Image 1 (spheres, rainbow, N blue to C red):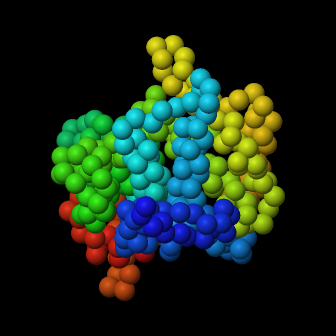
Image 2: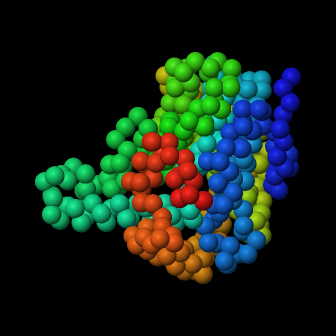
Length: 340
């Protein structure tokens, strides 16, 4: 039996990874997540909130594994049988779902989106006919950054920018491709391409009728469960002290009309889930939207926006168009310099 690698996590203890999963974690494009704080500049108000996107990603991977084992192990009609390599695809998607995050996490994401929108506004004032259909200030979806990603098959209804960038990295990174090549059944380029395609679709939440997608994109997904536990732990507040194991033990797959599978919670677990929902609400209102935190968010946002718009020889930050070009051309060094 292949030897498992272990990472010690402050929230869950030891987390095991197989050889391919550990090789993925050691890639430079993954290691850069160490330097991206999970909560942006929130540590300036809550000093212990120094945790990174790296630790969050490992935590999401851990929860996904626990969910898989529980759903497979149920001895009733709510069991779920993962087909083919669905388990492996979901685990890799969990590891790679945040790999596209930019500096300052969501603040940096908003800055990149806004600068693209401003650029399109400037062009539209003089080239309205040429830009027709690209910029629409009344559109429900933000056409400013969506226009840079024309492939609709990697769009979900609520896909965020960092998720789409994560999908692009999965599809174009030679380093990730080399790691996936080590997985049994993915040695062939065609099979590996299909695997990357499915991983990317899970990351962007392309199919909400798919159980694997629901475990990463729902109101009770691994991502939300981990950030509630981790953010409350490192900020020192008590809102996120939920019973994770009990919640997972009450997860079930219910098949409704047309045999469509849906992720549900047993009746016995309702109060625990209510606690989880209230914990998220209080964490958002008392920590994330703390007035001092919001002030620091705006300050850092202005600084980053200035760095994107005004370059110098000493520092610069890429705009979204340049990031997309680096990802698609696999310019790892340029991407690493920007992202770190």
